[in-house]
Image (cartoon, rainbow, N blue to C red; front, side):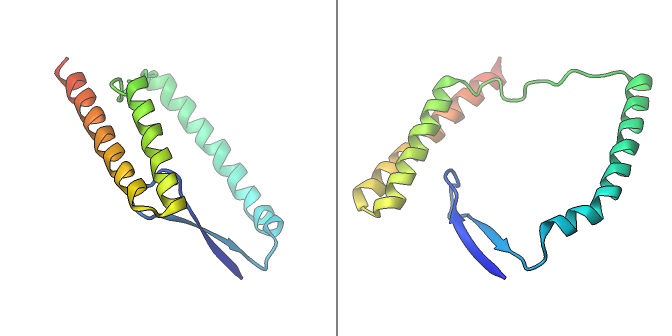
Length: 118
């Protein structure tokens, strides 16, 4: 078995994705589970249709209305600073990342609080 780890781009802490290669081909595993998945899919569809018919369908509410373009740009800057720091391991890049992280947190916090008040 071959196991490797890869760094994630946006994790706040040092989270790593683990990838493992097994000896048993994936095709054999998929074929065994295919019939069960097909049965479950049909059962799920029937139950969902019956529930929708009886109960009706409720529209989803947007929970994160406060998440706007400003939040997205701050998050993007933070991710770029983190990647730069991971790549170089320089102290000034770490300071830049920490500053971007604080700025991002402030922006998101203010926007979410403002949204809750309205």
